[in-house]
Image 1 (tube, helix red, strand yellow):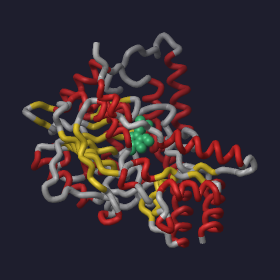
Image 2 (image 1 turned 180 degrees about the vertical axis):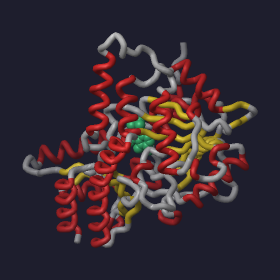
Image 3 (image 1 turned 45 degrees about the vertical axis):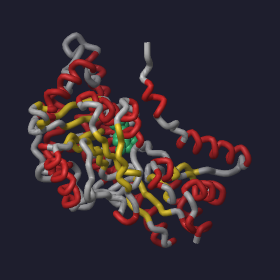
Amino acid sequence: MHINSNYQNISETYLFSEIAARVKRYQEENPDAKIIKMGIGDVTRPLCSAAVEALKKAADEMGTKEGFKGYGPEQGYDFLKSALASYYQKTSAVELQLDEIFVSDGAKSDIGNILDIFSNDNVIAVTDPVYPVYVDTNVMAGRKITYIPANKDNGFLPMPTEGFEADIIYLCSPNNPTGAAYTKDQLKVWVDYANSHDAVILFDSAYEAFVTDPKVPRSIYAVEGARTCAIEFCSFSKTAGFTGTRCGYTIVPNDLIREGVKLQKMWLRRQTTKFNGVSYPVQCAAAACLSKEGLEQIRANLEYYKYNADVMTSTFNELGWPYYGGTNSPYIWVKCPDNMSSWEFFDALLGKANVVGTPGEGFGKSGEGYLRLTSFNTHGNTMEAMRRIKEVFK
Ligand code: PLP
């Protein structure tokens, strides 16, 4: 018996536990401090009423002899896949066939599971700073990882440089943690690289619904050539507040072929073997979010977060603090003032303004000197946090 020794190589995820420990210590020493948490990547607005009604209706259906449903199709019901195909049509002018859409319980699972269809000897490229799931899932399988530095010189949007070699490339746009978002022209360079090197892009579009700039694609398939090199992961988590309801989707185009094999067929085989689908009520709720009424309701929630992001970016403009994100993203990646390190600024912000952020260094070496703040708070808390920051740091 041997365990998977690669697990010994996964670095301890101390980031959020260290944040929690420092906040707890500070609160114990300062019991009257009203701490505002601006570091968490979870949404706070409740589910829209279209989703709630659909959940209730589906639950009622499941309680009747006629409406009861057992196992559904592993890759999702056609009603949801059709709704998603129309959504892609509407938001990105992208045409998808229904068998290219795979519904799941969220993007995180699919991002980890997709590795089943790739050999372990592939060279993996991730940007640094990075959403840690891309790294840890590969380390678990013993794969080699190349880090592409994202920094102020490339606007936190790294491009393939001379001599760059990778088989599988993770791109997340709009990005977590930096909030930076690739334009269509920039993504085209990555797509051309992947097609000419037989590489595959794993494109994470979890934050597509926050895009407002028409130059920034909401799907990689809006870029010519992406159908032959990219798999896209997306989710209702941030779009519709489904972080606790759980529904995501992955697109594997029929034109994506490597070593003579259709990756769509491999992923279908993987999913039908290891996954039994998302619950019927949750798929009904997800489809309801894509109805005319649902889209209006989720838009109102997205506008709520956008208002917060605007309050935050105008504060940083006033203070003259450089930042990324905030326009096409719920994340704002702030340069720490006075050349403070990420953790120094974290402590200063907590101690002087009672505001909690996430130190950028926790997302990778290139995140040092930055702090991630999110717009997922209430208007009241966001405005109060910014008022305190202005007062302390102006
Ligand atoms: N991808 C990115 C970049 C994320 O930030 C997150 C969640 O924070 C996910 C994927 C996970 O999404 P889901 O809730 O659908 O698993």
